[in-house]
Image (tube, rainbow, N blue to C red):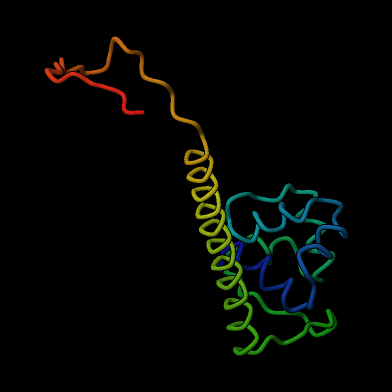
Length: 145
């Protein structure tokens, strides 16, 4: 199991949120998220803190050959398969909501731009650019009283 997976596994086993782990280690919640996604690696100091927080050795965290098992004295919470699926569903629904918000914002901005363009007065066309026809009138006009 990779380091990122173990960080996630042990956090879930302890029943902690990313924010709780971040506060315990004095780092940002985004750092915890990046570690769990594998896009960043924790420093040695943070690995030590994670090991102490989760009740495991640094070797257990970084060695991919050692399986992730929660020590009995660590007070782990056993996550059920249903809870894991629900956690994944929550993430998917957050993404769907974010995409929906972006779509709605695009529609609203498009509508506002359309309304703004419609409300603008048209620019006058210079007479020199107009196509003119020569009209001759052969009849006389008289005004009737």
